[in-house]
Image 1 (cartoon, helix red, strand yellow):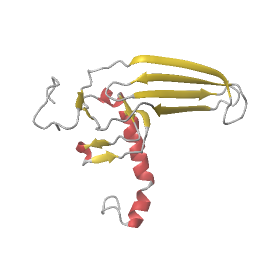
Image 2: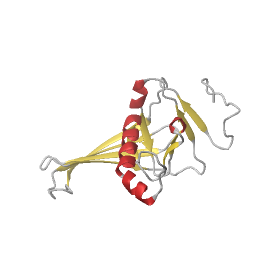
Image 3: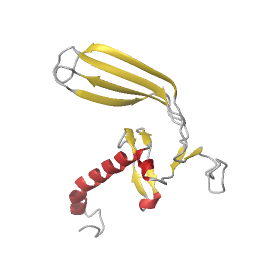
Image 4: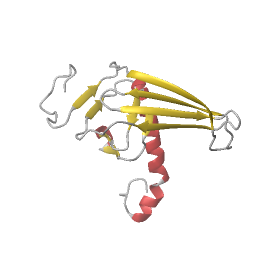
Length: 166
């Protein structure tokens, strides 16, 4: 697609495609927030924790529920993202073009069936079932870097890496 959203010759006709520029903002509709008090804390087992659930529909994606549990007794805190609704038969390709440093603060919701490809980093890919949740682009890249670095010595021993960084 070009900058006006019109299809170009390079677009895949079988796959919906959305191009997101840094200036484009979508507001989710039908946001719902629910609070549940006196929940059992999984850390201290006292029934004083509170859970906040925020359900929303993300355009071009599906419904999600972000849950946060906070315990005032032991200060335990846990956040989870649960994906709802059906997965579409055909995926959607969404392209984010980074023009400015602030674009690294864009929020990305990655489901268990999504993969992220960054062609400008020699076809760098974050595969399905990894890094599932809500992240900024910067956070997603930092997590990928940490994961790659932490397993580098194992890949070198297995011979799965070229002479890069030996």
